[in-house]
Length: 363
Ligand code: SF4
Ligand code: SF4
Image 1 (cartoon, helix red, strand yellow):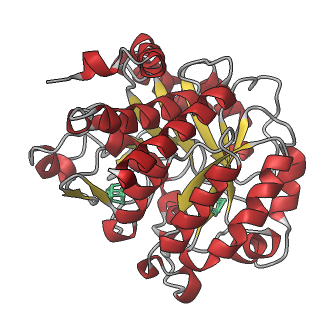
Image 2 (tube, protein in one colour):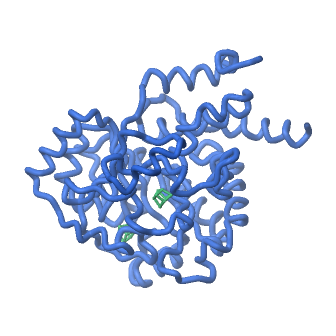
Image 3 (cartoon, helix red, strand yellow):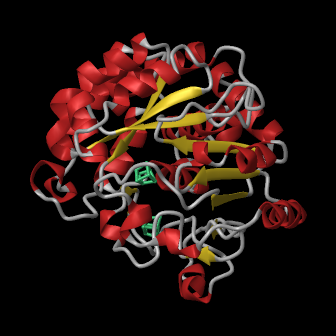
């Protein structure tokens, strides 16, 4: 029976797997570098659960936090918040010590000097009108501002969150982002403020998934989502598992509230902690304290769900490819591995996926 060793004889798969193996295992945490934000977006998980009430730690406290995380073996941090561009000194300290990914709303440009290779995900929730309405009460054209701030900036990718009723905007928005010289990673909207209607995640993401598939076909060298990845997020199904707390992989390992989950037999990241902006306390997970997991479509958590389940994907070359493409893209977009030509590799990944789905539908 064929196994991973056989699949790796394929030069593309062998190349990708070699890069990941050389980079080594990720020991990740998330950190709110600040509790301040210059926006109040509709349905922001951070303010929805009052995570800003943790307060903000001092510069000295951040320095000692960095030292203790180095000792603990952390090598990758997802920086969230709050708005990280409002805390550049802290961000710089972190950048000098770890591999990072930072999520920003794009209003204030994170300078290139001092942050030359920082992967920056710029949040975007729709076209100019929709994004402005949902995130700034229609008062600021955030998209326009962020397009200017990150034009042709190789560090930046759009982290484009789409609600069920807004799939019709995808083509126009993607065109603008690509013309601006950036890549894209799609995310799915959670209606945490219960606004309902077109924003309600309970309406399902069928149209959104289709719009993303069209974007991949149009711009295969620029889109980080694969069809497989979308299917897992959109359906919440991975083999015989259903997405939710019981299978969630990124839960603070030091909190007793998560202990029962760690004993249920499903894999998890034993290093992970979601740190608050006091640089000390932790919460259940990066995106929640008590929120219902039924509302969680978070892209980063789904990356992790797939990546940790290599064994489930070992049954055939196609399944292994699904796992490897997802994992490679995660390592690549977060610059955990350096690749000379990410556009070339992305095109090949999407091409392979198309071939695989053709074989599947013919077979
Ligand atoms: S920019 Fe981010 S942290 Fe600030 S309100 Fe919007 S979603 Fe929340
Ligand atoms: S909200 Fe999402 S990331 Fe948090 S515990 Fe639930 S499933 Fe996991």
